[in-house]
Picture 1: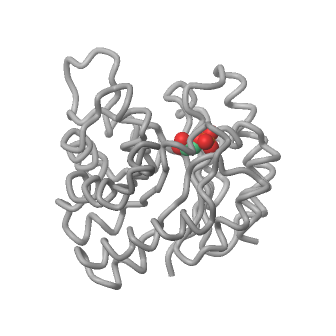
Picture 2: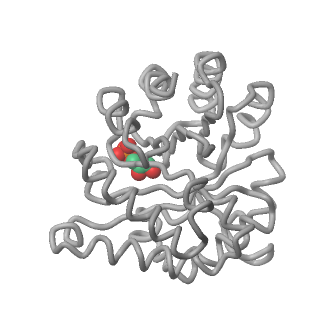
Length: 254
Ligand code: 13P
């Protein structure tokens, strides 16, 4: 059975102390709520990773992730952080291909394919984001856009490596806008992603892949979104910065 995951993406928010205290609150609140095959992941800025990884070590099913890595092993890349460095502080996950990184930092499918390789090589589980812009949705090209993002960014992996990848469908027009994809719109794309995986890796791989929804998910809409057959949890931005809202979303799977 595939895992259900609720992952928080703090983006570029929270000072050191604020982040550590939010994480402590989250661990205390969710530790008894994360049940069965569910996992909670908190993807913080790099500055918090080492401290929160230590705080989270005792909470089963609560994991830590970064929001980016550089694709190179090490070396003269001022300001960047490598997969092995992230792994060395105790993080298990890394978000890759977020639309903000694609749009503001020029991350192409080819660069993301390299980042994916670096993450897997060092034992980090990627949460790989795909999704269309407003214009791509309105022009009806969204299936094609998503298929290309998968083919160019992910499908070079062999079956074994692909099994470690979590996908996140994040329609760009729904991120931070308060506009959420309707459960039907999201389910339609999630089902398409699963079919596309099945064609590449087979039905069993497709059934075992966790596919998260992201884009203005909150305590009021999470239960109808997560009730969809092919939606296995969420990648939560704004609502992950409030421990109570995040807890409510985690509890949807109880
Ligand atoms: P919001 O939940 O703030 O829309 O952000 C979604 C997101 O980008 C998560 O990665």
